[in-house]
Length: 166
Image (cartoon, rainbow, N blue to C red):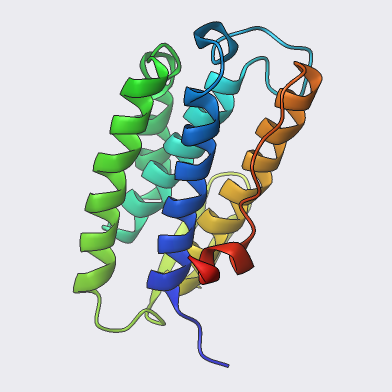
């Protein structure tokens, strides 16, 4: 079976866009509203997705995991305070940078040795990192859908199969 990391990443971008479209239709205060959930606000979930994407693509670029994690932690508070429009712009810029990075790698199955301070060494392919970021984002977009239901709203479906129909 052939993996298609660029297509999967395009799906990730599309699914994030679905969430942004849903959130833009809701009252503005929903984005930062405190809620008793795994994350304390939707803004913190989106910030987490953004920072994790940023971290993993920094690793693809050659940054050590330790340095990529430190950079993400340093950005965390600043990103969490952004408005919905500002975080959407950050996602758009990051997506363009990441797609350009993926396009310059001629072999998505080439590997990177990652030294995870919590889990140790892992030889991982670029395509596996992309799959991880996509599934990580999907998991947390599900968190957002749950949070919206707790707040009396609904989300839109972001299933991969729907992306293929677009």
